[in-house]
Image 1: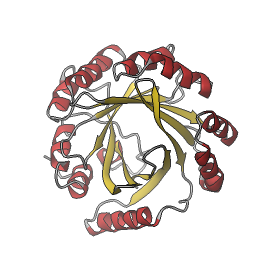
Image 2: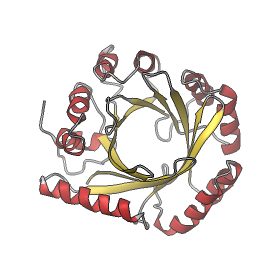
Image 3: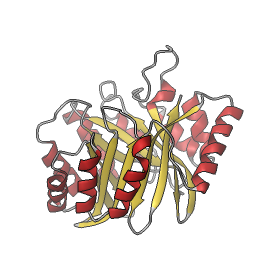
Length: 294
């Protein structure tokens, strides 16, 4: 196993199973989507986005998402890689491999909650930036149905948002439980507020007003609303904001963020740079901060 910053950081923030996840994803070709790479350096550190979350159970600092290079990934490799993570069920592995073979027009990301006892992957399916994909709404409904999500629920969310999702995610667990999530991207606060009201997430409207001055002018996803479901029931709603300045966070999250930055510095890794913040409205409220290597 190499000692690149991605691998080193995985092992630092998740000593229990970070090694297993690092060993798995090291087999995969990854895309450096989180940097323009103007410095000509090693692209691998910029293939991942990390996050820390504050909720009722405390702080979770071991979460990561990596972008698969679907053009370079050989047939069978993705399934083999995911099979090495015992918590990833066969149906998610098969789906990921099928999408890799049959839908080269889509992007795939893998997400890992490293604090869990058994490492496993979540699957994110994206429309490439600025490229419309015909039938993506129906594809979302069809694939989320594999996670037990009622297609009528998916269609209702798309109608409320008045747009196709930018991407969607499946969380399939080995014990048979599952959920699906839709991500809707917006440029204008008024459209976000309208959707949040329709979804019954008024507290997130208040948060939106509080952070308006902190949101960047990123042309691709400056504001994102996600809805997550199991079967036909909405579980929670989340507001994501791409940041130009760090808003006020919970004290615990601010301390955790400061500690992570110091830890990266102590181990002579690249500095950490925040990207998004998110606020989850539902039975288990949470606040998250997303970051990449700078």
